[in-house]
Each structure stands twice: as C-alpha cells, then as structure tokens.
Image (cartoon, rainbow, N blue to C red; front, side, top):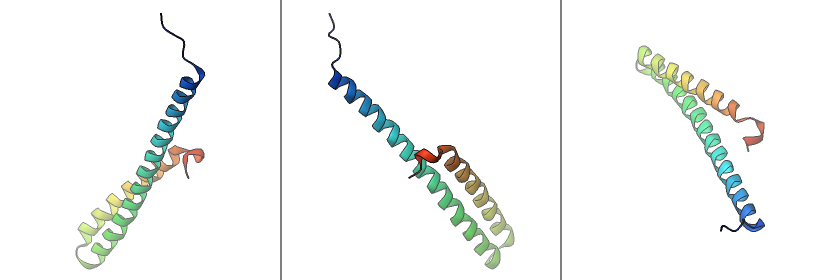
Length: 85
C-alpha cells in the first residue's frame, strides 16, 4: 500500500514547479532581449555597410536586422508585464 504524500513533499514539489516556471520565463526574456540587441546591431551594421561598402549588401543586412527586431519586439511583448524584470 502506498503512503499518502506529506505536506513537506507536496510543498517541495510546488516550489520545484514554480522554480521551473520562473527559469523558463527568465530564459524567454533573455531570448527576447538577445533578439532585440541582435536586430539593433544588424541594423547599425547594415547602415554602415550601405554607407561605405555596398548599398545592396547593406540594404539586405538592414532588412534582416529589421526582421529580427520585429521578432524580438513580438517575443518580448508576448511575455507580458509580470514576466519582465
């Protein structure tokens, strides 16, 4: 016969679930911030390349930077206000 779980093991499991959810939210926030930074860097790099080396290549890099920025903004917005610290 199985013994019922005691209160301590139930609270430990609840804390472990909370910690896992918190770690997941932190990882998603970090990913969103990395996308924002990467998109901003790509845009700046693309503008620099377009002004100095090649307009076509710089335009492509800038456009990719914009796409990454939009993805980062979308991901960051989907986190909601309670998950951003």
